[in-house]
Image 1: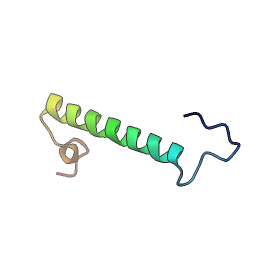
Image 2: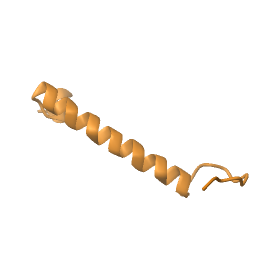
Image 3: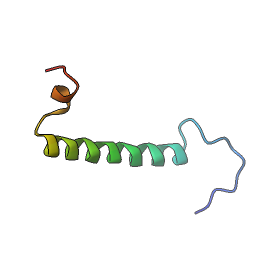
Length: 49
C-alpha cells in the first residue's frame, strides 16, 4: 500500500513506527551477534562491568 498523501513523516504514524520496529530488530540482532563473537556482554564491552 503506497502512501500518496502529503502528510509529514514524523511523529506517531505507521511509517515511523514501522521503521522504528525494523531498526530495533536490527539493533538487537547486531548486539546479539557482537556478544556471540566477543564473548562479552554489552555492559562489559562499554566498560560498565
